[in-house]
Length: 180
Image (cartoon, one colour):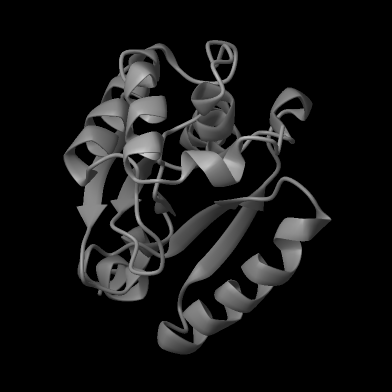
């Protein structure tokens, strides 16, 4: 492992289902700090994604295309720490929106350090305007016919019509109907 390069590249993992302006904000901030940023689009094992891995990768790639030191990769059936070891990445970027994120992120950071002692986790705060924003809220607003254009990058808008259709087809629409 090249220790000199280990801390020049950071990865920003997530499912990005879909990517939001909050995610893009974190990627931009990280790209100013680190030589290289790898956005890692994960296929989650603990939840079902609304968009396919290919769709999510395409949305992320198009959303960060203007950042020359950012690349997009996928993570399937593998631990993030193994991905980091294999790709000589020593930094994991995590966005921290509120205190409610802290407990989960804290546990995850310690577990990752147990799996890969050289890893450093860097928490970045989003711009104030994005502290409330999540992919879950974007999907809920789109499902109920709301305008998501101020919440997501332009590439996601091409897929907005699919959100409502897919949620209702999966039978999830009735449960979410009255939550916003």
